[in-house]
Length: 229
Image (cartoon, rainbow, N blue to C red):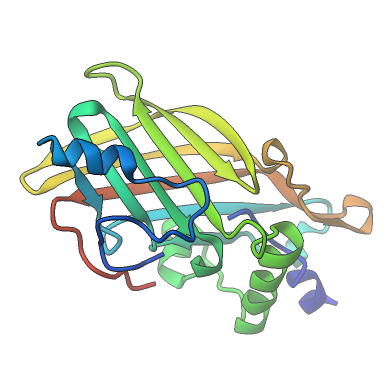
């Protein structure tokens, strides 16, 4: 029974060598603005997948929550562009390349347990097929714009499962000789993207609607070629 319950959990949530344009197989993502800006002499950075991370914590709930696990779902396969002088960025990642419950990320999230391998495999299957329709919507697209010159707030537009929402995110921007790093945290509701969190036994075991996300996006003029998940 416990194993079955573990397999019921959840979320919502490409690494490729940096190229002039991202793969044509990413619907809704265009590099055109960045390529034109770069050809006009503007500084354009490419996201370094090896140094970048988006990690999502998915929480359990219900009267029998102790029978399940919280989960950490993460991407180190983030691809895209940053225009630092214009205060904007566009990037994306694949849902099916996200890792689940890496021990180091679980420790960073404050968890002192580790789900067994078969439970993690079951969680991946459920996430990609039952909670998310990853075959139909394989990518998460993100567009960020600085709220105002010198402001630490970013307007972050997220497209997930064909639904687009914009949130305002306090962000720390670190300028580096070779580029920049942006980091921050935010919370989202799965239901805002048309996702129904899983629930069984009349809600005695459930996935909470709220997910907590932390990110660190590093962009340089010569981005690393491949992330290691």
